[in-house]
Amino acid sequence: MVRKSPFGYLGLFSFVAFFFFCSSWNWGNNYSALSEYRKTSNRLASSESEKSFDDEENELSREFNSSEHNDSSPLSHHANNQSVSKIEDSTNLNKTALLSSHQANNQSLSKKNIYYINGTYAVLNPWYGWQPEIHPMDCSWQFCMMDNHTSKTCRDSMEDMAVSNSSSIDPGEDWIPDVTMLRRMFLDGYDANGHLWPPQLEDELCHALGKNTSTKKLLDEAKIVGAPISRMPEKKNNKILCFTYTMEKNHATSIRAMRETWAPGCDGFLAFSTKSDPRIPAISIPHKGREGYRNMWQKVRSMFQFVGKHYLSQFDWFYIGGDDLVVFPQNLKKYLGTYNSSQPFYLGRRFKRGAEIGYNTGGAGYVLSRPALQCLLEHLEDKSCEPKKKTSSEDAKTATCLRLACNITYEDTRDDQKRERFHHWSAEREYEYDGKSKFWNGLNKDWGLLLGKDSCSPETVNFHYIKNPGLARYLFHYVQGGCVRSE
Ligand SMILES: *[C@@H]1O[C@H](CO)[C@@H](O)[C@H](O)[C@H]1NC(C)=O
Ligand SMILES: *[C@@H]1O[C@H](CO)[C@@H](O)[C@H](O)[C@H]1NC(C)=O
Ligand SMILES: *[C@@H]1O[C@H](CO)[C@@H](O)[C@H](O)[C@H]1NC(C)=O
Ligand SMILES: *[C@@H]1O[C@H](CO)[C@@H](O)[C@H](O)[C@H]1NC(C)=O
Ligand SMILES: *[C@@H]1O[C@H](CO)[C@@H](O)[C@H](O)[C@H]1NC(C)=O
Ligand SMILES: *[C@@H]1O[C@H](CO)[C@@H](O)[C@H](O)[C@H]1NC(C)=O
Ligand SMILES: *[C@@H]1O[C@H](CO)[C@@H](O)[C@H](O)[C@H]1NC(C)=O
Ligand SMILES: *[C@@H]1O[C@H](CO)[C@@H](O)[C@H](O)[C@H]1NC(C)=O
Ligand SMILES: *[C@@H]1O[C@H](CO)[C@@H](O)[C@H](O)[C@H]1NC(C)=O
Ligand SMILES: *[C@@H]1O[C@H](CO)[C@@H](O)[C@H](O)[C@H]1NC(C)=O
Ligand SMILES: *[C@@H]1O[C@H](CO)[C@@H](O)[C@H](O)[C@H]1NC(C)=O
Image (tube, rainbow, N blue to C red; front, top):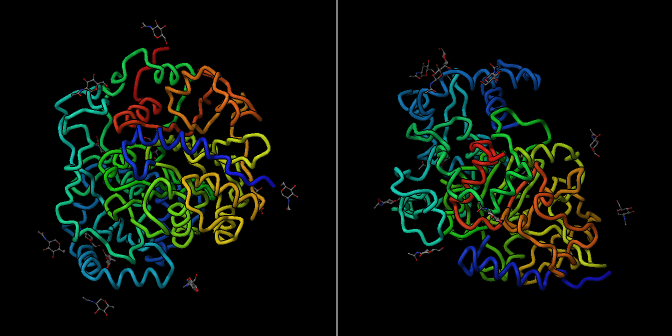
């Protein structure tokens, strides 16, 4: 078996690109929450019997159509209610007891964190409903998309995060993040202060890139569409946890943009960072070796272990990627829905050179079904999985481990016209690639590359190398139908 790293060269490229775009040495990169609510409520109000999934869906849909969910923040709604706030207070005060009870039941904070009392939801998570400050724009989104912009109103300023007292926010070492928080906030539609959440994306974004850019041409010509994030309960066996690697300084920029765009379309979301911040939620987890791009494999190993320990049974799919990704969650979920999540799958954008074991590039992010992640975790310490290796090519290492230890390999994730769904490149680069690079062609030798508008499926899942938060917002808005298309 050839075991040379297929990534050496590409690793260098990624590193350079990464350095460029993220300008940092470090890290670049329901059934839904509704059913969870209902399940929790069933447990608490034991008089209700378990309903069929369809009944549940209708009922929840009615509930969320009711005016209760648009007149005020659910939190302020509860604020005046003594019986509810009593629970909130006592629990908040005794976080230690709350956490240890979760741990005893092997549950993350999220499940037990919501109570359904007499027709309303009470939320026990003290950080639930937080969003960074939103200033009225004093400049254009076009300006905000320049990497060197100076405006503080572009929704990417560190000051908006207001970490004035980090000691009151740092949850400590035993903390298990509430990964369904963003999804629940999305369903509620309001933040803790009664403001719309996620914040609206202005139509001005539609023009921010200008009319004749490759990005816009690709979106239009490839007819890339993504339905708005669904408020309906997710189909059984199709729940996804999306998690990303990042660092603290990106919390205010790329991670904020993720939170406010695509992340709530995942059933769970968590940022693995250099600093814990439960408002995001982001967690800093220990790993072997130094923090840094060159030690990516060790960080990703720790991420998989953490996810496996705390969230394995709650989700069917696990999508890992960097913080310069934009994802279209409805396309992702629709596509995943075509697979049986009870079987091992490893999905993403495959690269393969010659006889080497191929891999799904970390640039596009990749998805593991629960059985695939389970097998990976069981073998993470095997010699063939190189547990001590210090390398940036986490993607190739994951692929090698899956292949050698679990006999799991990548799938062809193109659509029926051989257009790719997962993208290692930005939309701009996909559109502009002239097909002349031996290196890139080599990585795609076994299946070939289509160029220009044919490079991307209309049901594209992601783009990579999102240079700034404005671009992430633009792409998300455009693909969701928020802008009038040229043709
Ligand atoms: C809820 O509202 C949506 C959109 O307005 C509508 O399509 C759906 O039928 C409604 N559901 C129920 C149960 O009323
Ligand atoms: C809230 O819902 C009611 C009933 O569906 C509707 O009449 C009203 O316009 C909504 N208000 C807002 C602010 O969306
Ligand atoms: C407070 O809760 C009680 C009992 O749960 C409920 O009857 C009452 O309507 C609630 N009041 C408000 C203001 O939500
Ligand atoms: C928190 O709860 C635990 C267990 O119920 C109890 O032993 C402890 O004294 C409580 N701590 C505080 C500060 O109330
Ligand atoms: C929690 O997990 C541990 C180890 O995975 C297991 O031994 C224990 O029985 C579990 N506890 C419950 C209540 O499921
Ligand atoms: C729900 O409301 C009923 C009567 O309105 C009350 O008796 C009951 O205690 C309430 N339940 C909770 C958990 O507050
Ligand atoms: C910012 O970058 C643009 C090009 O991307 C350049 O035209 C402009 O002069 C730069 N502004 C500042 C203040 O550096
Ligand atoms: C910061 O938070 C800690 C813990 O909650 C508290 O003891 C301290 O007084 C806070 N400091 C300020 C300046 O708010
Ligand atoms: C748009 O860009 C293309 C190159 O991609 C160029 O040939 C064309 O002239 C441009 N059109 C306008 C109106 O600028
Ligand atoms: C999915 O795979 C599992 C495990 O192999 C199998 O038991 C189940 O029947 C499959 N479901 C469908 C719908 O094929
Ligand atoms: C590995 O998987 C392939 C394809 O599913 C199968 O044909 C082969 O028998 C498997 N090899 C082993 C050693 O299980």
